[in-house]
Length: 330
Image (tube, rainbow, N blue to C red; front, side, top):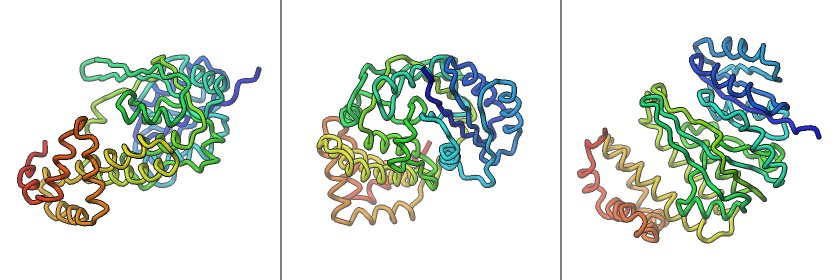
């Protein structure tokens, strides 16, 4: 039986030092019908040269796409998705690796269960101290709403794109793409929206993807980027609440997912001493609907009491909250 083509999309930017190992991990996959699509986001190093050198002698179907202007990871993933000819797609980071049967196991599960998306377990490898931790789940075939309920209850933590395979026709039918203006939280937004739209999904307990934590990642400057997470959460919450019927999931998105992001954003402004931004955002809390959303976090008072208490203080004593948190940025 002919294997369905699987497109692995690898967005990259200045990945010269690490992309060779990542591509070699994909080339070594035991799945034959595979295409590797590298999308370079106007790198300033030799990423493209390195990628071409590794892939040219691989015997694999491949493409190296060079974007004309920097659009960040979301734009690169969308570019790769547009170029992909596979029945399935996988989004693979340019500095990670995977076990040899990563693609074959995910594709086999998707075919056997006729699933729109499938996930596997993943490990976190930290180069600093060579430590490794694993995340896995035995959920098996599961309805998307049951998955989201397990996620809201904290029983599962898979919400990014790295350890998933997606049926491309499913993504196209629902116009699922990465938000290109979003600079942080875009992968979580994409995955949760996909889960909310899916008819069937499945998971395998095998730990097959390795997310590598390294020094270059720690140099990322998050200052000024948290509003992107807040907006991503707002978009995701609205989308999920439109597409799922589960009261538990809808309540979580409204009463925890949104308040948690808003509280974190205001806290960051206060800790960094950004008084003007803090005041501008805290003024929005005067709107009745927004206050109601933050106060609804009382539903999770036994799980996250600090979230409700911070919400109360931000609404009724924002100046006090600012004074208490000011200057506490690490």
